[in-house]
Length: 184
Image (cartoon, rainbow, N blue to C red; front, side):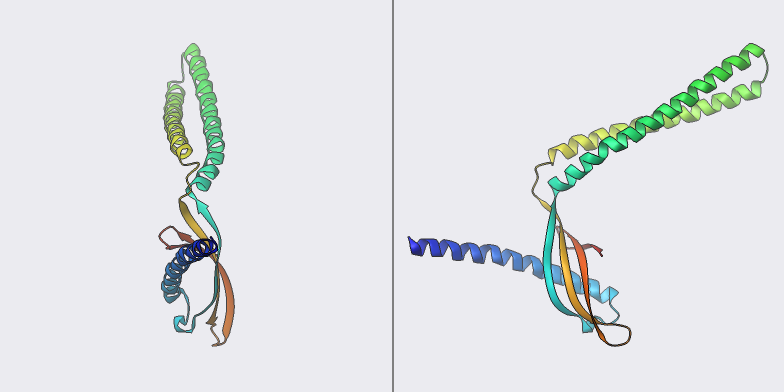
């Protein structure tokens, strides 16, 4: 029984430890490529530590997006209400101008304003529909554990512009293919 338990523990250590090593290897390759473009002297680069801080799953991103959707929809609805109030005011002006029997130019200006605001309302309604589609698609991904981004602390030494070595620490955002998406 002890041998079986020992075998199981060693298997897990090597199986999951190897995955972490492979991930870091891909990250190091991307960092070296990034350094060739961004360091003054890429040959002076020395890695000190590379630590995975956190990950962001597709489910996490979906939850964040779902929080933003009501805010966007509220903004769209407010814009539509403003447009409708302008349209209503212009229609009342047209009635006034028609009752007086003159000012054809002003009537035409009001009609043009109404057309512009109605066109904007159509765009806002289309945008509203798009947000609703995004909500439906996003709700499906809520529980998804697929890792979309890795956040890594990268500590390294490299030569500065005076030739001396500086120790620097960056937080790097990697996508699921280990391409660098941001450096802070």
